[in-house]
Amino acid sequence: MTRQDMSAIPNGDLLVILRHGPHGSSWLREGLDAALVAAAFGQRVSLLFLGDGVMALLGGQQVGPLGQKGTQPMLEMLGMYDIETLLVDRGALVERGIGVSDLSVTVSLVESEDIANVLAHHRQILNF
Image: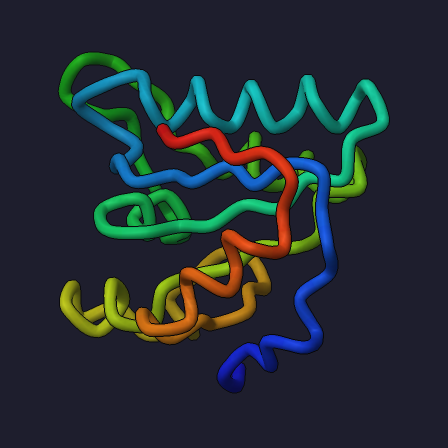
């Protein structure tokens, strides 16, 4: 993966920002659900993983302490809904010691200072 070229970011109808990890709350799952519903209704959806949200992209997730399932099955469905723009804050990966090879899906890396540009390419933004 290389740094995301800001001119290559497609303009989208909806950007869903995912900031929470897969376990401990329902925020991540609700954000993914919102993205899937919007895409099912013909919206061009992009996902941006920030902070602990990058943990959702790790492969080999097990059931969490509260019985919460991993997000792998939902991530695998994104392509069926034409959600192909998966953006990840490179800094969030570095802070957590995660390499791109640890991720279960193909993503585009975005530098923290470029996130404002990502936001500007979308008409609506949901933050989870």
